Image (cartoon, rainbow, N blue to C red):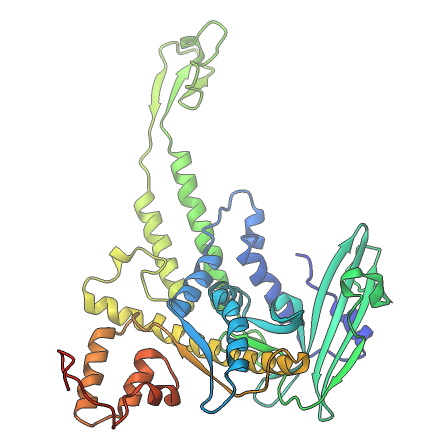
Length: 454
């Protein structure tokens, strides 16, 4: 398996010891290969793939972002132009959120890195094999990071290291370029940024003031890191099921071989065929020629297929994968062998629900930090007037919650005076408390009946 980068060469280049362990680097490489359906065990021609890693990451991303809504609005008495501009740029990210979440789920995390692109704020989605954490605080937030970008031009491999560091003096960003002409894993030797057209306009160094948080955000999968407990990086949603996924692929391959090896065939003496011993056209797989003296030898080959026991074995493995990945039974396995009643299905979905809720919390945190970084760049680029903003989030919880029943109960609680009306509006429409108050009718407004009469 080819390494993502040479850790030693980067340490030598920036003169900093990188805290990422070899075990973590190798794990990210493995998760990436599995997601691309290029797992090491698939090198064996006899092993076929069920493509489970992408299915697991895709399903969790779908459940976490289905009907997700998020928008930026202006705070009361604040200039709305800033919020409107931010929201316009932000909605481009929301449009991609399901795909982005799937990439993060597969590799353990992903970084949103905004930058000024003319009159717009563009956002790069940096996968786990394209950045290296350098520093992090006591809460495991990454405060310094190296972004890796590669460009190939002919036989030359160019690499750009973009270093971000949140310092007391300000926010430091540097760019350095390297070229490798040997084809090995090293960075090669340093060259000016102007040697690569795409990087010619970048500043080698810059220090920004009045920046309180990193100008990027990290979407981290909410599972404990069992690869390196000291690492601030997240782990893949299928990290704890790697061995089980390998066994599932092998069991699936056994089933395919069972069908192939049990194909109907006719064992027949060569004397029963044409003079030139050729088989009937289109029947080459049906007949098997045997060199025997028994002229009347003619025997069908039709063994019993053991598919039921093999499929039961595969189903058990799939259920263990579901448990290890925080999925409900029946997501990958045969649902007919699991839940029987509606209530049992609801209880089974609790595992998926808790996993999805944790991922949604991670998405909310990452997007909130992203908007902060975007806002800083809007100020730096003077792209919109100053103004304050609010962010609202709305996630679909119908995985285990009956939304209509939930709303009816909340309305009864509002009528009984048990909860405030704005709490209901916040839950119903996914708005902030301030927005909910704006939605509520004024006490002085006339109350109309169903016919529109006061």
